[in-house]
Length: 426
Image (cartoon, rainbow, N blue to C red; front, top):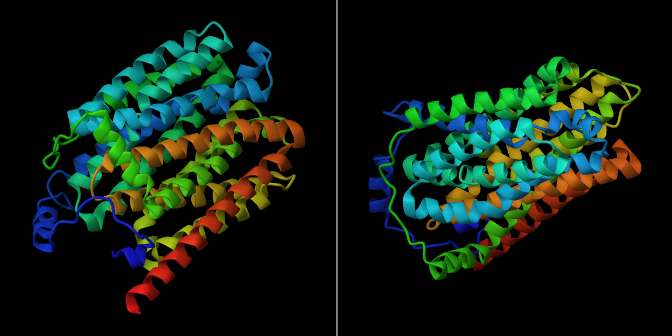
């Protein structure tokens, strides 16, 4: 895809000759080829473990508030600390993956994260719980950027969006199953047992991931020198297209983080007054995200990247408006649309980052993931504060502003692409 067609005004790194690129692409994995299925399932499980652990307390926030006697805005820090820790450490972890390999860093990250996850149920206070969650998020930072960089190196370019979509689909399954399981377990045995069960499931996923993931064949070790890392980061941040994609990822996640942090509180209140197990089951709508993320490649093929982002933003906004209803059916439909729009937009934006950066892919993906999880932390915190101040309408207002930001940035990208095209044809 040319710079003009993507809206990019610069391309990071040198571009190899067509013959060299084609030769390298031919040796990479493709659907139906050797190792592709094992690789896809391994990274799917890594995605499951990442989101199940990262958001393990989100559906349990009303119970955590009750045990520690705190408001939603304070309990929400158990989510914001995890996503904030990931956002802070994703860039350093990506640098380690450039030096020591994607598979090694992903394996180590999962090992530390699941170990901390087994300690979380024993937190004696909210403060200790928040600290443990922050450590867990920092450990998980080695997964997202390393996974997308691994895919960009080991999978043929034409299959990249689909492969990343499957990893994102694993995120949605992990987020869904974690919330559903914790909801029903917590209803019977409390939130501590619930997060312990999620920790045990994550251990099984981590072991299977390490056994299944094929050894990398196209990884070339880079440098850990701070000057080299700083230059790579500077080059990425000077790329207008990459910066737009980072902002889009952050804004989509602001919506998603705010909605799913607060929805449990809303559904425990009148007129819904739902029990914890039923509230957890509502997260089954994540299955919609599994479908929308895994079909993102076809969506881009039909509408183009910007068209897919417009559709994702419009779907998310429609869902936010529907969720304002005071009856359960339209609220559920709204959550379905929000989830479908978010996961589609995230898969499109994250795969575009991997395609745009032709060098330092781990750092490019890390910057995207950092922005993405900053958006999650901001959404969790601001969404909870808005809910406390103005009810569900306040949280929806925050989400609609974020969607407006996505549309505005995409429009700017469209104009930049057209202006560049005019220059090329002048």
